[in-house]
Each structure stands twice: as C-alpha cells, then as structure tokens.
Length: 314
Length: 314
Image (tube, rainbow over all chains, first blue to last red; front, side):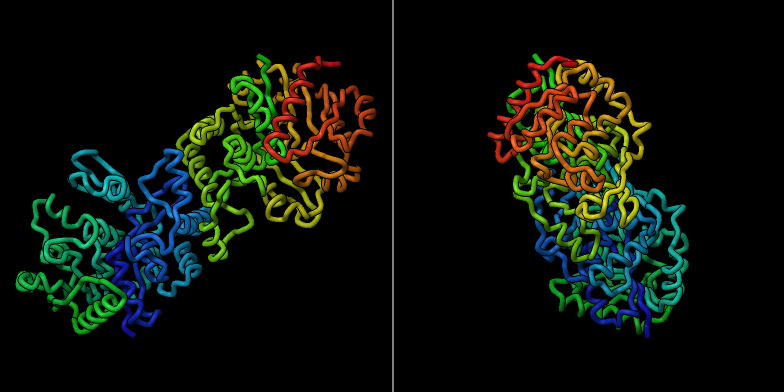
C-alpha cells in the first residue's frame, strides 16, 4: 500500500532497485532513471542507465562488470575494431539488440517513456521504469585536459581520468516530466534516492522541471554511494577530491540536505552520524556493500523499513 | 589500359565482379552498384548490394548463402527474436558492424560514395566501388497480395512470393550521378552488365540521370542471369512468368537491346543465339554458372576478351 519511487543512476542504483523490486509488490514501486548520460552512437539511441536498471531487473545483467549483459559476445565490436572505428564504447552483440529496438521505437514516434515501457515488457521486466524526462538532456563535463566532454566520453572513453572542473545538463531547462510519471510521483508516499553518483545521476533527475518540489512533500531517504571514503563504482570520490572536499557519506548527505529526512550510510562511516543528525537528517547505519542478491534484498528491506518509520520533516 | 566499368546488383553480380577484380589491374576496374534496395532498418543505413559486392571482393562473404559474412554469429538477432521484434531481415553480428559504420559515416556528413570508399578501405577492398547515386532511391514493388512493398519487404520478408505486378524507383527523377563516377564512366572503354536481375538491379542503375547516354558510346556487354529458363538466384525468372513471358536469355538480351553490343549466355541457351543475333547483338556461349573462384575468374576473362574484340555498333 505504501507507494515507493526510487531515483537511480546506473550500476549502484540498479543493485538497490533490484532489492526493492524483490521486496515490494510490483504495483508499489516505480524507478525513475537518469537519462543525462544518454547518447547517440552509430545512429543508435543508447540509454546506459535505463539499460543497466532493466538488465538488473530482468536478471540478464553481467554481475562481474556491473553493466552490459550476461553471456555477452563481441563479434560486431570485434569487426568495428578491425575497421579501426570508434571503439571506446563497448557494444556487445546482445546489448545491441536493445539499442536497435529502442532506436526503432523512438523513430516510430514513441517517446522515451513509451519506448522504455515496451522494452521492459519485451525483456520481462514487471517493475515500472520511467526515464527522468522524455526530452534529450546531455550531461557535459568540463575537464582540465579536454575542456567540455559529453558524459560518455568523460566516463567511458577517458575512464573519468581527466580532472573534473564542472558540469552542466544541456537541455535541462526545457525538459519536462512525463505526465504519467508526474502522477506516479504525486501519488507516492516514499522517495528513495539510490546509491548513485549524486552530481551526475541524481541531481539531473532532481533538476527536471519541478521534480524537487514534487518530491518535497514525500518522506525521502537517500543511500550513500560513498563507503568509508571511496565510491564503490564510478567517479564520485574522485570528483569530491577535485572539488577539494574529503569524500564522505556526510558530504553526500549535505548535497541532499533540505530534501531528505533520512540517510543510510555504511557502518564504516559511523563517526559521521552526529554531523548528519546536526543537519536535521536521521542517519541509519548498516552494511551498504551489495555483493549478491541477498544483500540487495536485505538492504532494500532495511531502507524501506527505515523510510516507513520516518515522518516528513522530523 | 582498357578501362572497364561493371554494373552490378547483389549475389550474381558480385560473383562476376570478383572475377573481374582478379583479372584486371585495380586501376582499370570500377563497379557501379545498385542502391535501389537500400533501406533504413532499426535506424541503420543498410545497402545490401554494396555490402555483397564489398564482402565478395574482401573475401569475407558467406559462399553458402551468397549474402552476409563468413563466420557470422547471430546473437544480436537472437535477442531481437526473443523480443519479438522485426526479424525478417537477418542481421548478423559481424555484418552489423558495416551498417553501424556506414550509418556513422553518413551521419557525419559523408555522401554514400564517400562512405563506400571509406568502408572499402577499412575492409581492405582495393577495387573502386561506387553506388549508382548518392541520393536515396527506393524500389517499390507493387504486388497482387500486398499492394506496394518496399523492395526488401518483397524480396526478404515475403521471399518474393507475392505476385509481381509492377515496380517503380521512388526518387529516381531527382537522383544524380556522382561527379567522380561520371568521370570514370566517361573515361571507360568497356561496360559490363553483370548477371543481375535486369529490372531490379540493372535498370535502376541505368535510370539514374543520363547514365544510359553516358554508356551509349562504350562497348557494352551483358551477361545473362537466366540459365536455361531459370534464374540462379532471386526473382528474375518468376517475374518473367508473372509478366507472361517465358524466361530465357533472349528475353534478357531484348531488355538491353539498343545498348549492348554483345551478350554472354549459357551453353544451355545455345538455341537462342540466332534470335539474339537478329536483334543486332553478338552472342557468346559459355558456362555461366559460377561455382567457385576459378569459374568466376574464367568467366570474367572470357567476358572481358569478348568485349575487347567488339566494336561499338557492330
């Protein structure tokens, strides 16, 4: 009966989403996914975070890499490499089918929400997955070495090695929240911010139209993507350093201050609880490292129970 | 020193082209390929005849099927089938790389001639291959059962089973001959019409702008795609029947009457030589069934020697 909306980026977010989908009735969970790292590659519409969430929920994701598909083959990619074509974004043969089908659906006139619904059905995913917007939003990362880089070039092509200076979301000011998505958020009781990169995965979602305001009346809990002083995946910790901030769960909580009521952080960060509490946020300590499906389910249950006990504006 | 231009469609044409490439210095041969069956599928620009000619010349074609690539795998296609997506055009994993690369090149602003040159280089093809035009030309086949069908739907999706009524080349009136291609044809001594479907592979090439006139001053030889009363591949013989014409090499020669000086037909059609001669066309009998690389080379040599002895307007 408690309606949950989860905000998620790629790998880390998808793991918690997997757990939430296991513990909640499917009609009570909606996942809103970052599309700021979507891009067009070889003419195909690629939505890496939507794919990662879908593949995780369909249990066809590659657990080793965290992205891409189980039992993947690379023959198309091998030919592209032989042709000395762009080879910085690895396109698996099976993964390609998703990009082909999405491109076909979008070309036929569907918006990204509709195309995502069709793809989920085709992949057997019953959880409702929504892109943060149907409009194109492009994350541009400004780096010391290369200036402006489209997100996937920063993240994949350059392995987030260039020094981060700033970023922006091109197209964000005209982007809208899909009407169905808006209704789902409106009807939600709890919002869970998954352990994704706050700047590059969660803030773009919150920047779409009046998303922040829509969420402001809900009980909102975030899960730290920083464990100890490291990010389990991706550039979050490195970005903190480059902003001259010591990476910590507390620093993540501060980013969400004013919006979240509770914050879930790893036992390794227990010393930060008082700082978090001082910001008006209730901390909850637990083991946030998600090794397997059991730990994903366990954390999902803990986060959901924690959120269920909170009231708005504790 | 004799400059040869070959006009070719897909499988049958590509076999003779392979032989010509083996016997002629690479600077003396240019292949002009039908693009009337090009189409956009899943957002990708697919040029089936260009691909078949390229793959044959690169010796990476599937000799069993006549189309597609050697050592192909079908994992992307398998996923599309699982998703119950369009599955009538089989997309191999390795073949996909060509479509991706072509789409990228065209999206980057290259025209089809330029994109083809780049692809040939990447695949190690040294023979010059030119599309008949850089503009989009779509062959539409009108059928009894389904009305108008885009060529690939007639040919691949419906296995050319629907009854042929007529066809047209959408876009043909505004299509132009690429300036480089025009110069090559202008400088050519001999034009060889490969054993491809006359209506669907060769006539579209001849219909582009002033192609017929450009060719009219050259010695021109065609090779029959009809052996006995059958087409070795594709719908040519079936189309003859549906036009209430008995399929024969002679009927093919008549289609090219006024343009060709010589006509190469199979020994099985020897009884048609007099009819062909009566049309003012010099016939040459040989074995036109191309089983292996030796027979391709042998036929190419015979056709070239035959054309070399002819004079315009015998």
